[in-house]
Length: 419
Image (tube, rainbow, N blue to C red; front, side, top):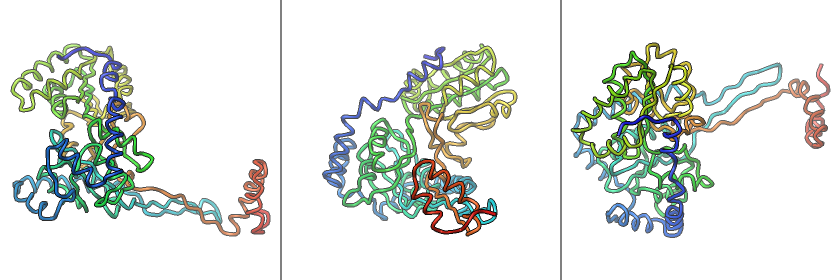
């Protein structure tokens, strides 16, 4: 089960299966477009075996959810929410900054939050209230006016409690591609959103990709991945459990160890195998391990080069000088540095975001952050003197490009030549 692989194997193994579900997703999108709430109710019965009277979650249902969740869990959700909010506040840019770059020429950027965004929260096997906090809180920190959430029925009470703690404004019952369609297109009950964020299965990912002409999305975020970069100084117990921890997410999860220590993979597997034998999520982990493996390299520079090519969602660095290793990493969704930084800390409590690009998309995408919920406008403010200084450049280049009205829009202001 634990096998030697190449970085190419891992890339091929985790390749997107979106194309295989496109026909199904197209039909679902069209059904929601045509029938709205009725489609959501029919699809909930078909896929989730739940008969809904309404897709909207009432305040009474949220209050009832609190009765089903122990107070200590509520307290720790609130603690995690505080940490997530604190970290994401550090990311928030100034609403407007202006700088006079030379006399009469003032330039800047105005940053504006989106008005309405949607968070998709998976249900069933992948029902994670922590993802509610990770998607909704950054949106609220950004200043988004309306944050809505979709999750399959019946909702995990923890999910509803987390949504309340995070300040979600509207909650709806629906999962899969139909939830994405409802947020993108709108229904009788749901006003469409400007952007959809959150992880999901292959149907959710396909729907997000298909509806990008209607709504902005975060990035493809599929089954969890972890890569551990370890040398001969790594603690084998730490390595083994960081790998297993991500494997228990989903049968499609993928884990990889890259090391220059030829003995580490076998030692780690002995610990993993012992844990898996009695693990509550044994079946899921065993299937995930079929997508997983290890690479042994001659030196750590080569290991880092391979890691950058893989571009994992989560990267754990367990080397002699982890900060030096960190300086050489270019591609990873979230990086966990040193032996006492388990990936699970970022999943729940440190405050960084766990909604991250998967399947190599960390080469070009950032994880979810405050700026994902904001847009920027450049600002320029010229005085008469400032325009006079720029006039020769603008008029000369405009005329050279044959855009004579551009030049005339400057000359008509009669600011004269710069001194």
